[in-house]
Image (cartoon, rainbow, N blue to C red; front, side, top):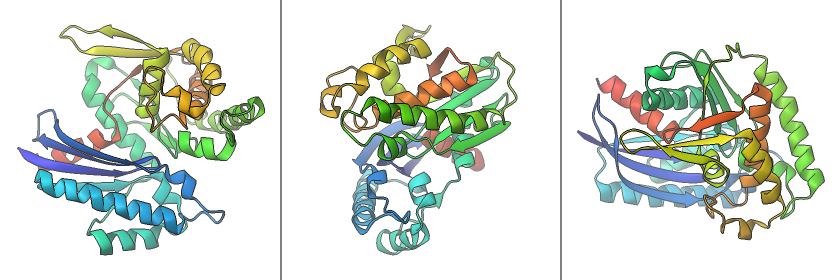
Length: 308
């Protein structure tokens, strides 16, 4: 048994997950620590992360490392996604993080994000789930993947994350109808190109991951109990069509009164809903199932596979 710390420097949060794990076993969560930064707020006109944003990242990583030390982790798996990957000052920031905190972040490509998330979904669902079509909405990007094996045949990343889409299009709280319409049209254009790269069979098991999709499913979806007591959470496109306009008419601070809408997602849940609805429409999907495992679990599973 090894105690691992997975440090996820994402576009919305910096999240440390501590797990106890060994090859062939399900990772058992032991502790978690999260800082909500919403990094897209700190992107300057030249594509850099501002000094304020860099300081916030360093503070959050330092805080996470203190927790990691207290929890007695034996190995750290630190990674970063689209916010740092795309920042014009990303390389300089990575150097600063390494020098000031000792953390050497691995920057994942969008395709790697999709592949590792797909691995986690496959392990959670098992081989009996057949061909999987995966939707994963992060803060900065939307990952799409499909395949029948542990790693997907096709994996792409689209710049349609919930945080990015909010900052780029939904400039008011609550957003105006024309802002939502502009985001929808933008998403349709990008998704039309993305879908063309997928060979569809029509019998895929459609899966959604990420906090944004889980939040929307808790609000607008339905839950059933599997044999053994585990919940199966599903979300339909018609459910999104009903709820997303209602969310868009509410100010952000009022949305947290709704089931599933947490304070760290309330500002970007409308954009996430628009993007998810358009993704389902583009792929001709009426319903998806939510998987609780995603990128962090994929990172852990890859590490354990190499141990084995």
